[in-house]
Length: 245
Image 1 (cartoon, rainbow, N blue to C red):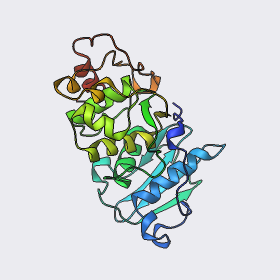
Image 2 (image 1 turned 90 degrees about the horizontal axis):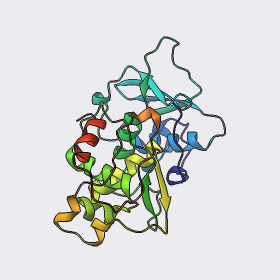
Image 3 (image 1 turned 120 degrees about the vertical axis):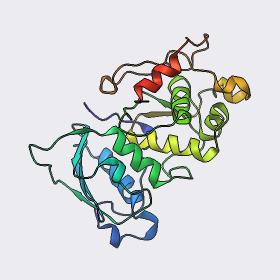
Image 4 (image 1 turned 45 degrees about the horizontal axis):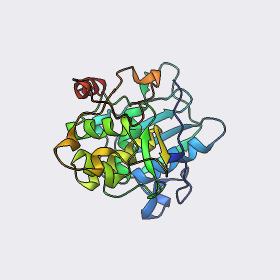
């Protein structure tokens, strides 16, 4: 399965992501350095292999051509806060290594690099939309994230509009958009209309968006764009199942 590409995650980050994290200035250390390396890898004409060595944890190898990662660090053992991370390129995983879908790891990196503010590669004038639904089954995902995922799958929204439509704090909406942008499954538009629920906040803001598909993540099924017909019953429950809840 190939990694999805998006104009929402192609901006440059400061510093050289292939240097040791200890040699980078504080602004680009830790998960920020890892996010920078992912973005740099996506800009390469030939998919790179990245290895992230996380202090006191172990190493993870990211293969963008196969959209998978291998390594000896369980996802739930990755530290939340920034730590020393050494980023290397061109170090393949052993041939017999177990491969895992890359979506959950990229989500964790994207949400932890900039937990309370917009990622610097995102443009404040643009709205964002999911081109496919993610595979986050290995992660503990709350109902608020499910709701925001459904909204982004059916409409374009910026963080402010997403927060109003989903009735969540702005920081939570920013975190979700950051995460999906690093997974590489957002497309951006400066002219798309805002979600109806954001224009008219209230009880309707939590209504289930229409036609949330449940195809496997590796099928890269594209969500429906901004429909106005009434939502089908049970779509939020089906999306919860898609995300492993």
